[in-house]
Length: 130
Image (cartoon, rainbow, N blue to C red):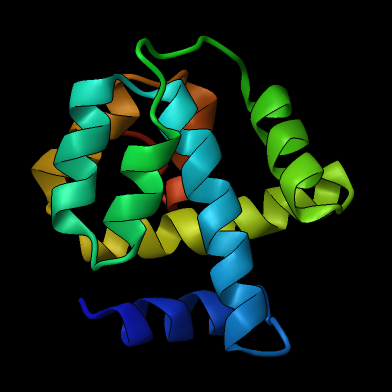
């Protein structure tokens, strides 16, 4: 999937006003995701997403994954986007369902397997991908 197509899908799903808003939300969600999954998984995900999204992930990746729940995920996204946590939940879903569309099923399973089961719904999945 190309970058413009990725942002178009995020914009449509999130009902954002323009491409810039979709890009800002996408970057915020990916930055938080990069903190939550292992550095190796960040690199694997980055390799399957269009540039510059891979760069966003790689820059945001810490030395070691942090462990935090879905509420904290939403809080961190909200902090970056200056939105309420409920809005950040919407934002995360718009971006992560697009991530799920853009990567292989195996990669998606690898990401989801590093997260508590409550995260799967953000990717548009009830559980692991088929």
